[in-house]
Image (cartoon, helix red, strand yellow):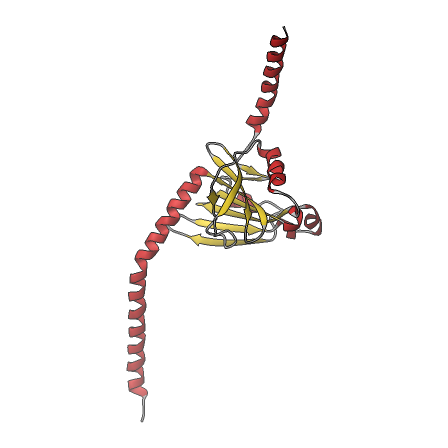
Length: 224
């Protein structure tokens, strides 16, 4: 009888916990969702001030947007633990979010403290052995060791600690869009390398043409 009761309690606990597991959304950070459009993100009131950058146009449009939530108001400076949020868009779709936390807000916290805090939103993490980088962000070009990871088949969320900033950061991305964006960036770099010799030829020709035009003009006006 006791065994049956224990089994029953265990089944109830599993059923109660199942909605929580299903409710975890690895595509969202606060009000931002991977896959949302640039206009949708720009409509977020708290995204002030903003700084946008066009990384490339071909073969796909890669755009980046940086905001500092803690700089939007005196109140947010006192309450928000986020220092900077860095968004990346592939053909207008958000595919990466890099959240850097404020040093003062995380001062004294251990890696385990931060893992536990993030786990309240995303569940139990994995502890993979590996590194990750964000090459288009000048603050994260070097690889950083992954402290913990939360993921499913579509999305990945990685907690790291920046050696340069000495601050914790959350790097999340859409696996499908990230793969497409990486392929587009690699192709763009290859195309740019192929275009360099022709650009140099065009530059030299323009210099020669400009010099000849100046020569012909000065031949007519020069008086010794």
